[in-house]
Image (cartoon, rainbow over all chains, first blue to last red; front, side, top):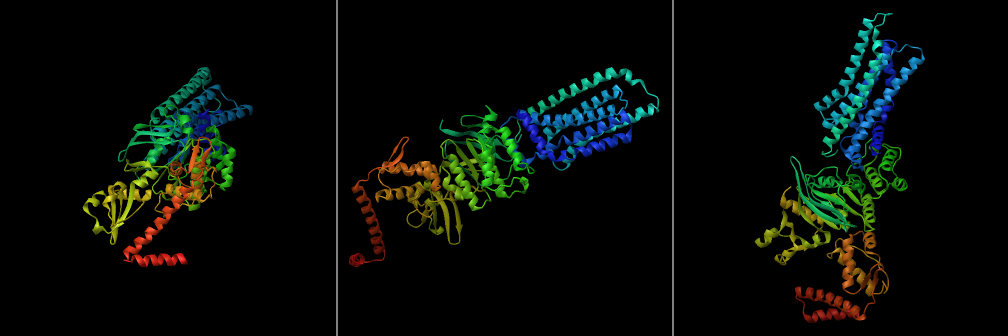
Amino acid sequence: MRALHFMKIDYVLTRKQMYFMPAILVLAWVVGTGVSKGAMSLLVTCSYTLFVASIFSTAPFGYCTGKNKGFLLLLPATVKERVAGRFLYGLSFVALLGTLCAALWGAYALAGYELPLWTVALGLCELAVGILIMALEFLFFYLFGEGKGNWQQLSNIVRIAPGMAMFFGMSYFVDEIQEMTPAGTSIDLEAFAGKFMQAGVVAIVVSLLLTVVAAAVCVKVIGKRDYA
Amino acid sequence: MMELLEVKNLSKHYKNFDLKDISFTLPKGYIMGYVGANGSGKTTTLNLITGIVKGTDGEVQIDGLSREENEQAYKEKIGYVGDESYFPDHFKIKHIRTILKDFYPTFSADKFNGFIRDWNLPENKLIKDFSRGMKVMLMFASVLARDTKLLVLDEATNGLDPVMRTEILKLLQEYVMDGERSVIFSTHILSDLEQIADYIYFIHRGRTVLYDAKDELIENFLLVKGESAKIPPALKKELIGMEENAYGFEAILPSDKAELLGSAFLFEKPTIDQIVIHYIMSAGR
Amino acid sequence: MNIIISNQSELPIYAQIREQLKEQILNGQIPEGETLPSIRQLAKEVGVSVITTTRAYSELETEGFIATMQGKGSVVLPTDNNLLREQYLLRIEEGLSTAIETAKTMGMSKDELTDIFHNLLET
């Protein structure tokens, strides 16, 4: 219960950034449609959205430093509950953007676009990678902090690089697929769609498990620290 | 259980500072002043008590409970006010109210709102735009609106105007009024806080210097003034923190050495601040 | 009752409280049988520590001016007139002693001093 309250605190801490989330989603859609069309464009849009999510989900770490932290540290709770709250914030944030992507997917389907199942499976994999990136970033920020000077630049790289890699990777992949499949023809990925779906679901489950492991490591390590 | 706060051999090791063997008890219904120069370890001690910082050694019990036994219950007993606002800068009062409500079962929104009204704290401003006095009063409101056993104040009245200081003095005395709750406050200068303190704990460079009931402490020392040239060697040995100027000296002397004074010197009862200052002079900063 | 604390006074605060209460009990300003405010109440009103007021009360108790009963608070006891007399006598002696000592330091004769004393009595 208190973990949920800590999650709520993180949303209050970062409430300002919620205001421009809609704009970012629109941007993601524009980027997607710029690269490709239909289901392919959705893959790019989703990877861009998750890229943004991986950056913004780490925001509470930046708001929670030094003197401003005292009030939160004094709240009657254990380190476990604090860390759990922070990871719940990260997960729910990624899930929120993931849901918006799913909604976009649904809207395309209703609009009559053809959405092969294997692209949906790939979308699930993207979500899994998004969760994993969030968990690793949280692990990094808990263990090493925000840092100052050069160190802060490193933490900014940590904040941006993995999501960016995923986004560019996906854009490259979509490009390649398009080159391999000139208009009108289609490669037979759909034959493996069932396997792809299974892989997607497994990827999500594994990423969630790894998130729990990351959270447990954080509790273990910072539990002994001061100001934790 | 008469003791509200028990601190036993509390120690904290840092790279370039050591807090060592802090031990005291504070009975229910009393106020303790924790005094020392800047950097003497006051904040470290209070942070160890609130549990924000973890001790290298020793233990702390509040109302018979240690943090290790039950962190949540332990922290609920504490109300902490620091020298600077510890709220996130871009929070408003409503955000703090929600968090307090979520986390503290004994939080009373009515009481809280009462303080906000009485002290004219602005509901719609960000906390970073509050004046220093407002920030301090908001900390007090957030603490006094719930049921706590121990108030921990770290230099909370620094830089406040005298009217506010007087108000806080009254608040503290009201807090211990029922004889069940206690206050520990740290400060580098006691001044008006001296009168309400029952006990004084004085540390210097992380070590205990003096610890006693305030009235005893004042009686145990004399503030001596006079001409430096007239000081006999036997007296000179006993004087603590002698401060000389062109026209005379001032020092602290244990009262049981009063017979060494004769009639050549002026002596009077010291304030705790004077005792502390002369001790620090004798020990070196 | 009135209590005024002076930081300039050489008397410790608990003694100031004790003396002022004693005086008011002796001159009847605080009548016999009256309940004094509780130790904590007084500490808060006067703005001094609880230990300080506790000491003032316990000394008044040993001197027989008040009695503290569990749950009923501290009650003013009947003052014995002899005690009152004794207290005033003590104060007169103190006052006169200071005058005599001052006279001695300036080398005033016994007669001169008694003259001043008589003159003052006349006025």
